[in-house]
Figure 1 (tube, rainbow, N blue to C red):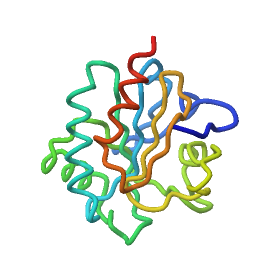
Figure 2 (cartoon, rainbow, N blue to C red):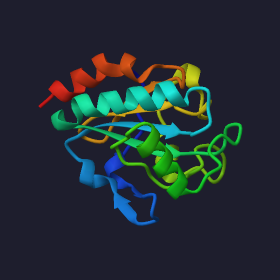
Figure 3 (cartoon, rainbow, N blue to C red):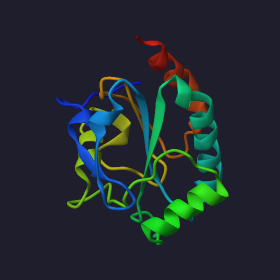
Figure 4 (spheres, rainbow, N blue to C red):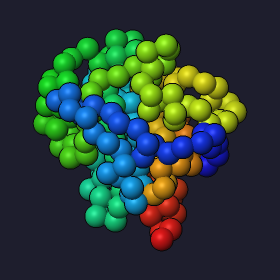
Length: 168
């Protein structure tokens, strides 16, 4: 776990849910967050959605929230509407975690959330998201404490999640 955005917290931001309504991320204060840019047609989709659902089921009652942000910037692998994306994730993978409005994670139209997430000093990661299913782990105070490659298995983050859940 490394890298910390200069100032602020994800709790200072407002995002849109899949229906276009505002969601104030301060509602997640006191929870550990795993924020992921997702896609429905990626080679990583099956394993990531399956493991994200397993993590959520195991840790949601202990204070873990998974926030999924669909993104179509990588190989156009998230072409559907928000409604189609939610139906896909919830039907095929029984996803119970929130799925938000489709966003951009790179470039000048990058969402404010992703601009914040990428503002840490992550060394090898550089500034941009590499592909679908990049993962950010956020502590109960809204500070980014870990960034993981798209190929990192969600279950491989379990140790880091447990450490954050254990902090009072």
